[in-house]
Image (cartoon, rainbow, N blue to C red; front, top):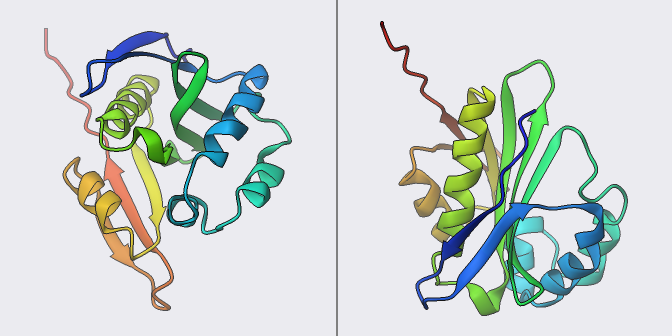
Amino acid sequence: MLPFPPTCARLRNGREVLIRAASEEDFPRWCEMIQACSRETLWQRFECRSAEAVIHRAQHGFGTKKDELIIVAIDEGKILGESRLCLIPNEDAAEFCVLVADPWQGLGLGAILTDLALAWAKKTGIKRILVEVVPDNLRIIRFLSARGFQFFGEEKGSVFRGELRLEFKILKG
């Protein structure tokens, strides 16, 4: 897996944030970000409304898994949001998710984190990006659809599955 190079990005409010791969040492700051999320934001991302439950589930191996890339946005020592790619073995595919804590939503951070994760996936040779979204999260469904994701509902209606096929262009000499 290719390393993710740190970069800076400017938000709509003019703030510049650092974007880099997360490490194990970021876990306490990540927990603070989760606690800054509303119950609705937690539900739309984790299908759980409790920050404590989300943190409990994530505490083992944060930022250390070989098959996972967590990209975080940092400003003044705080993690504002993340995007995450979890590789699916033997499929040239990865599961994707993005989360921006409530105080920093609407500033373009989700788009920045998403676009950087998708560009990294393409460079790495991943051919398909998969997502699962709760059906009432129309904002993320529209957002990802605009980036080429196609969505399919489940029979039970509890989740929408989406897929983006990454295109590779072969250049002829």
